[in-house]
Image (cartoon, rainbow over all chains, first blue to last red):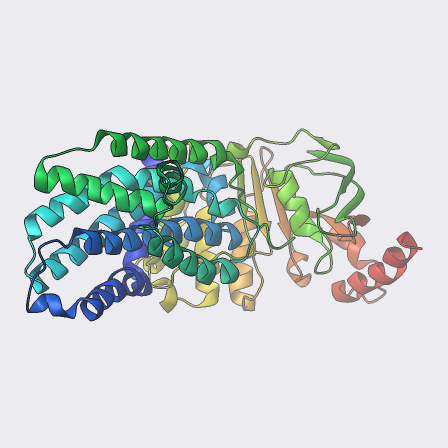
Length: 247
Length: 239
C-alpha cells in the first residue's frame, strides 16, 4: 500500500509538470465547446445535457486511454516499468498508483471544465458538478482497467498516440448512433466505451435533475462495467515490463 | 548463479541473441560483461533478472524481490527534483525498514551524503549528465539486494564522474552479494577486482581477470585486447 501511495505521489508530480496534457484535455475541449456553442452565451438552451455529456465523455476517454493506457505503454518502452518493478518487487503498485493519480487528474480537469462552461453559459453549475463527479466516480476505474489492454500491445508510442486520438474522436462521434435494433444498440453501448460513458452520464443526469432512474439502461451499463473490469483483471499480468517493439 | 548452454532467440529475430552460453558468476568480485553493441549483454541481464522469461539452463537464479536492475537509460521528467527520485527509489522499496533520509544517513560517508543532499534540492534538468547518473547509481546502491545489475552505468560520463560511479559500484561488492555490470570503457576496470566475461554474437569468447584480458595485447592496451579477441576468438567461433 505504501508503495502504491509513493507512486501515486510521483505520478501526481509528473502530471503537474506535464503542461501539454492539460492543453489537450482541458484547454482544447473548453475552446471547442465555446466555438461550437457560442450562441449559448446569449441564450441558454433548455436541454444541454447531451452536448455537455459528449464533452465529458471525450475528456474522460482522452484522460484514461491516453493519460493512463498510453502512458503505461510509454513507461514500458522507456524502461521505467522495468527499473521500478525490480525496486518494488512487482509492477502492480506502479500500475495502481498511476491509475489513481490519473483518476485524480481526471476529477480536477472535469471539475475545472464544468465550472468554466457552467459560468460562461450560465448553466446550473451545482447540479452539473454533482453529475460529473458521480459520472467520474462510477466510470473512471472500469475504463482504467479496460485501458490496460493498451500496454499489452506491441506498438510504438509514436504510432499509437495519434491513432488513439482519432479512435477516441470516432468513438465519441458515434455515441448517439441508432442501429434501429435495441439488441444491437445495447451491444454497441457495451463495446463502445464512449457510448457507455455517454449513456451513463445521461442516466445520472436523469437521477440528479429529474429524480428518475431507467433500470434497464442501468443494467446494461452495469454489465459493461463488469466486463471492463474483468478484461483488466485478466490482462494485468500480461502487461510486460520489457519493450515489445525493440529486441 | 550459473548458466549452462543457454540459448535465446527473440521471436522476430532470425538469429539467436545467446548461443550455448555457459558461465558462472561469483560473489565478492565485480562480474563484468563485455561485448560489442548488440552482442547480447542486455538480453543476458534481462534473462538473469527474469524481466524476460528464462529458457532452460539457468541455475540458482534469485527471485525478483532480491534483484535491483539499473537500466542504461529511462526517461525522467527534467522538471522534477532530485529528491523526488531519491524518495521514489527508497520509499518504494519492497523491504522498506527506514525512511529515505535515515537510510542515507546510515549508509553514506560524509562526502556522498553532502553531495546527495545537494542534488536532492536541484531540478533534474539543472544537473549535469554525470550528476544525474551518479544520483541514480548512488541511490540504487542504497538498496540492499542480493543481486545488483548495472547496464552501462558509466556511459556518457566524464572521467571524474566515471571514477565516482565505479567507486560506488565497487563498494557494493561483498561476499553475500552478486554485482553484475556491463561497460564499453575498459580502462576503468584496471583497479577493480573483477571477472570479465566477453560475449560476442551471443557466445562467450573470453573469461578471466583484467590482467588476463589485457594480456591479449602485447602493449597491454585493453581496447586493443578487445579488438584482438574479436578478431581471433570471435572469428574462429564463427568459422
